[in-house]
Length: 113
Length: 114
Image (tube, rainbow over all chains, first blue to last red; front, side, top):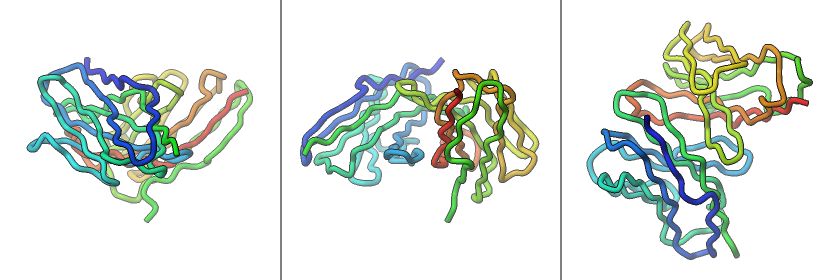
């Protein structure tokens, strides 16, 4: 069965520094990949998704992610973070043909001034 | 532009009490989901629905029931609340199947069981 691992529960980073949030999934079958963001006391909203095609996916708020099939990874990156990026970030995977999402445990991005 | 609306936003219950959480979406989505979110565990699927009048069990269905009498509404019921059901509950909806459609979330219901 598919599983998703977000390797870091918290990532502290200074404002304007780059950041990478890591996500690995278990199964190498064809997948769809998503990153969601949850701001404090809010629901989750879609940041970006990989369905097919280019392995580099760009999302909202300057975030991007790269699909690496051989390493079964989908790491999220931003070249320069802002205090407003403080949130929890969730990676999710669905196997093609299965509408259920499998979720990672989340990574809290902590921006230090 | 409401999207997915959950009511109530907060609730405190005593052990053994019952309650219903309401989710309403105005996007004409076929699929609806109920999740619970607990610290360090991500989101876990409780029940889901693939269309009006249908429901199915997710990963953690015990102690919960659901109904989808109308396409736009998905209700989550707790018949006899237990402290282990203290959590944040999220409703989500998506347009279709195949896994490639993003899910749209409500703002959550924070439920405490004393």
